[in-house]
Image (cartoon, rainbow, N blue to C red; front, top):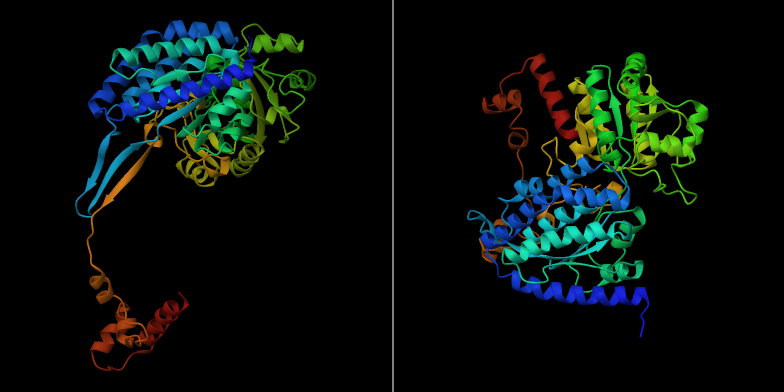
Length: 509
């Protein structure tokens, strides 16, 4: 008897979750040292296979650059592990004797992990390590367009975990992915939390599943080059980021915003470093390939080189062009250049002063990518501070490549391939997601007071409030308190004026 693919997928999900739940119940008895030994083995295996997995991902998806995906795999394995290896995640993790509080880590159980095609193998490594570090089992749901390399990454970490003593079934992966199977996984009653990395529709599905979820929205970060910036270095960093794995990291820059007073220098430097400014006619041709008719990003351009995109659009560009740059003056859903483009395409905006640039960056973010990431290149601390106070992002990156800075490779942020967008971006966290987001905390609180103590310190019901003397009420006004203590000394006109001002200010508060 033949079964429909969707039925096979749903049944597989049910079996995998059941097995993962049983394995996690065994794993919950592991000590911190045992958990860490399993994670260390997983990280080492991921690093040892980083190059092979990267090549598989490029060959299967056609996205990105193999050598850059090697670095991503190292970020998802050894860099992630180095950042969290000393974190307490098992048993008692904190004690405060003075307050009588003890905190105990409680695993969430089974993590449902959605894996995207843009960063397939690195995300498997990363999500598996942080889930297991927090004491959980994990069931991986692969993107169909990257199924084979995702399955191979799963085999690498699951085999390493078992050899290090983990229960069989702690790390599971769906081998027959389908929309129906993914939906069954998201809604399964034994799933403790969902880690959703993928398209906007998938993230919405995770949040509407009825299970707790950590999802991320789209990125669309502008890069502001302020007049005090080291322009050659700023452009180099932006291009390093935008061409890294051909722009497939969601924290990568999507627009350059600069000031009119340095426009010529920035344009010259962009051209010198391999940027090609599209003419209006060329911009129109390329724009037809950025978005699909339904308003979503066209997968045909994702992770492709500037030359491939130019050929696709039928335009001629200089040999060695690294990034296509389109001058723009508008922002909107109908302007594809002002939206997320996971490939080497940048919009280019010029504004009169940093205040106008600040407003333009906010307009871009509210159009798409609010809550995610943006970068600023500047030496002016006051301008940087103003951007930090105003921008609706969870990561403001200063003088660093956006893609690598956002995921914690070139900054002090926690290494992560799931970047929270905060409430403004529809996410449950604004953090770079780590093990600390994948366990609950049981707080053991010791009594410090008795009811009689509380009643003794509380005002009696119906009792008139104790009168407050003028001296007590305004005791911290120096001139008034000093003269009150003196027993009614005659005050000068200046002293009266000083006291009057102080009293009036107090009464206005």
